[in-house]
Length: 284
Image 1: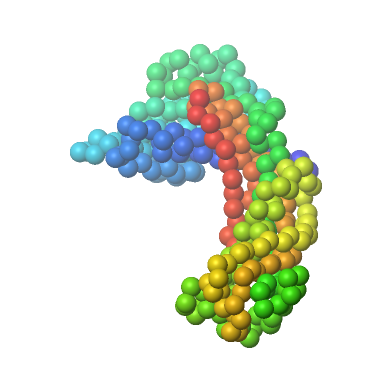
Image 2: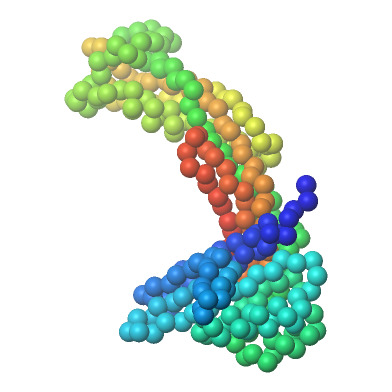
């Protein structure tokens, strides 16, 4: 499927937004300042509409404000001088301190035109060709407990016998206090599942759903746990669970010269919850 020019431009615009937001949020000198970032901001001056791809306003307090604007063009062909002339006019009208024109390449006349306006900085954006090794196998895992069987060990039984009880009809005392036992079992089952997954090389698995079984035991001191009037010395849990491996597609990967690098993954939906989007940003 051929990607439209608008979609290509939006990807670069989003990448620049992520980088600039990261720069502002991690700059110690701006810790007490208020900043605003807007994409596709429309400003009308003298009945003329101007669209700003990325608008950044920093409020330093006491009436001091700084404005920076960004133009993002993810074009196959080099940027010409006319685009620079229009951008220079935007900087003037908006009264920006500086304007960054981000593109994959600039023609020689565009470069010459940019030198006329000292507020303009031309920035080259290029696609990252190879992923860092740490991100080559990036994935989500969504583990989910499907069933837990409980088996109790008591000295009142034979040494090798385990007592299986209906979890819906348990009267449980732990350390002398009556306890809703099912949440306790769920928590222990979660620990067993997580420990099992630490030994699973999910980074090597294709996307999909995988099923597992794992067991774990909990020992109790004498009379610490009493179940239905029986003193229990140990609890064995048999846990059945699934683990969903999700490998999101890469949406974009840009190296924006002098500003930073960003790798953006597609949004994923986990367990009918909100969409989760992940981006990795590195400041230049």
